[in-house]
Length: 147
Image 1 (cartoon, rainbow, N blue to C red):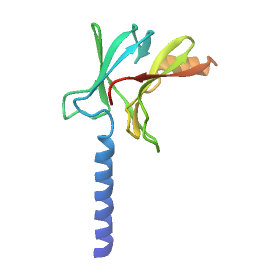
Image 2 (cartoon, rainbow, N blue to C red):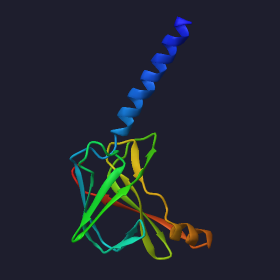
Image 3 (tube, rainbow, N blue to C red):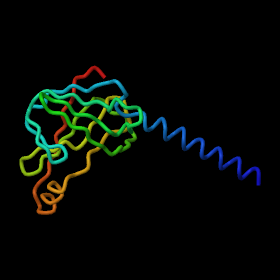
Image 4 (cartoon, one colour):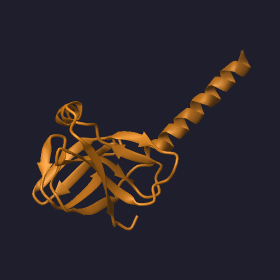
């Protein structure tokens, strides 16, 4: 009985520690990605014009590392992301866009050296267009941020 209880406690501790370290592997608190986006794009059904944007975690320690802030000239949006995992560490910091019917949708944010990415769920408009057979292409923009 004791052996089973000890194994359970050890397994729970490993899962907890692994979960905490994995959750902190995204965009580090206090760091910012700055990127110049050359064409308009859509995030959560809101269109953002081409321009310089910064992306960072929310400053509150109570928020999940998947809650991010996008800031541009006169525009700000707080949005939630889905943490996706990869076997290989990212070689560059990237913004990933899906182009559907000529519209660019921000679909993921990847940070150099991380094995996770912040994915963004497709909107209803994206899902409808894909269901209607509109072609989808993926564009990767490498952010030169120093990390």
